[in-house]
Length: 438
Ligand SMILES: [Zn+2]
Image 1 (tube, rainbow, N blue to C red):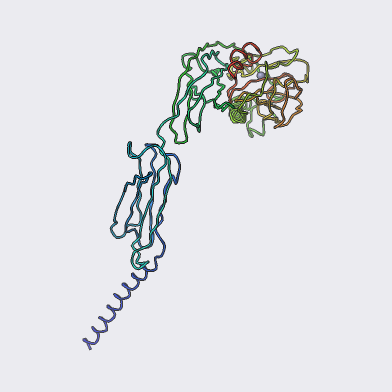
Image 2 (spheres, protein in one colour; image 1 turned 180 degrees about the vertical axis):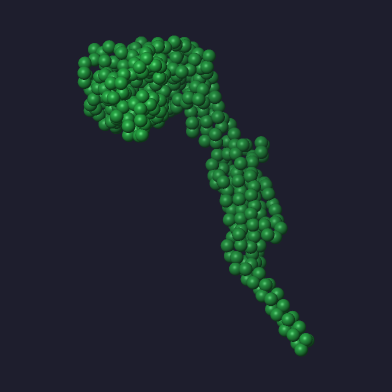
């Protein structure tokens, strides 16, 4: 009996072993899926600092071997050749091209990987992944063509330059501010940039930058002369009547604020900042060539009520409550006075309730130069309209944060408000802008 029992036991054990081997073999044969090989980036420009990541995986039978080959013309180099121990399911490697390994220009990375499956008469499932790249480690070369750049704090200048390869990003950097350069019909680049109203002489160091598709970046300095400016101080009294009149329209923007003074501060600080960010975005919606001609028009028969750069201190019931900089010129004429377009251009904004500006129009004059007309009571144009210098586009009003009927007129350079006075001066425009353009 005991003998019989152990025979049955042996038989069962053999059955189990055969079963395991069979299942294993079945699984190995059953794995008909090749490993996955992913190159990232899968193509494009590469520098010595750009790693090409190779990721290989085989979730079923596991990886057996991998080979990575670099090819450029007749040059072929094996970068990696590996056999893996059993149970390797993933392989990851970063490839960095070394100096002198290959020449500038096109090359290929080919990845071959095979799994441990017995499919294909025991040779396994194989995959080949290829990536085509361009080695570019040389930054673009910049040649500045214009020699004089005289600037006033809060004002503009134009620089023209050449770049020896097509840049993917180019313009003038002033600290954290960036002014895009635009390609001109003759192939050169033109950039209208500002010495921002908040940048002091000692902190003003503009440079032309150009970056290529591989992200090789070059900066180039150029000659400039900068004049600092001390802005006027102005005192603004915020009356309860003003708050009662003006604040209800902003209640939707900042709901649930119990006091009108607090709501005023929210609008004067947060909405102002939001509007500035929008000006920055709109500043990129621009023509690559100038659309304007001659000097910019000023609202006729109007008195200047506030200047550009005025440092405003706000008082409520004799208490100082806020500080802001006034970044346009306030012009007052008669009530609902007709507003002419300051110069030729394309309407890029005509909106009701443009925050603190109320009903507002922005006209693009090219290269990021735009004019802003705000607190309007009526608007006659729509976004996309081409307008001519002097064409009546609106009527003045007191919408937004305006105490009385006036035009808040602004000039913006790639999103940064600049002093409109320069653009009212035909000689300044000729000397600093138009004489530089061929
Ligand atoms: Zn104003």
